[in-house]
Length: 230
Image 1 (cartoon, rainbow, N blue to C red):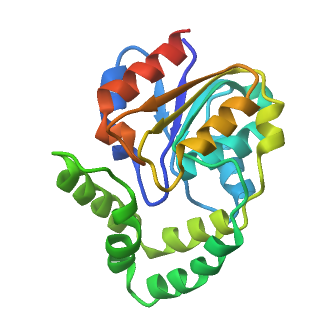
Image 2: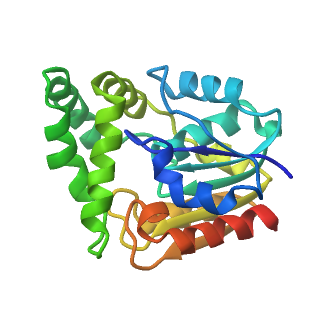
């Protein structure tokens, strides 16, 4: 069985994929790799490739998806299959770039929890019975990673390249998945990725926003299994 590499989003750790890891245990060798250690997408991808198996299926959510696309650009022959979830293939737009600097300054001044609470968490989820629990988990993951990880990840996101040509040239079986109510990486971005990838399936999950792995874990896991076993 081809091993699976999972890449979490910004200020998230392996707990982002907790439901999927439990469902896949004993079925598919699964590795959740950290998205840290460099402040560029190129550097983050190199580190992930160094830690990954020789050939693998690759799935990333949000920033993890952006790193995954750079891994494909650097080593397409190693990525047997690709799953991109709630992510964005485009370079950062100028409006968002202008927000990064002040946000980084606030975090460097000791305001990580406030930035996560006030500027990031409100964009993550749609309304649902598990909203409070998932938001608490997001805060726990962010505080565990700490301010220096936030700064490095912010710089990497700010300066990331456009990966449209990378996707257009990738021939492996691909899954493009998102929450129907994702405001950070809207459905239109996923239709674009689906159109760019030569062999892809598009899955839009109702009742979820930016974190369907936690909001709708059963549906997300089912889509991943279909992709892995297809």
